[in-house]
Image (tube, rainbow, N blue to C red; front, top):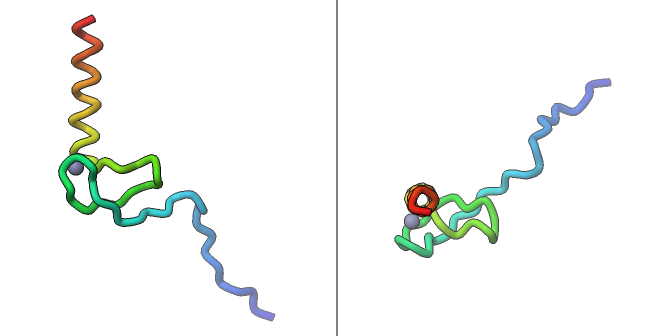
Amino acid sequence: MSKSNQFKKPAAEQLKPRKCLMCGEEFSSEGPHNRICRKCKSSQVYREGETRYSV
Ligand SMILES: [Zn+2]
């Protein structure tokens, strides 16, 4: 008997197309918590880093 060829993928990453709240461009969202595209996110992180430094 042949076993079924099933490629088991990690059931976590379900990317859905969403519109970025900041720039309005569609991007692959990792979930409802993720509404900002990578570009804007990275810029946000950058800002936070800056804030840290200014403290
Ligand atoms: Zn964006």
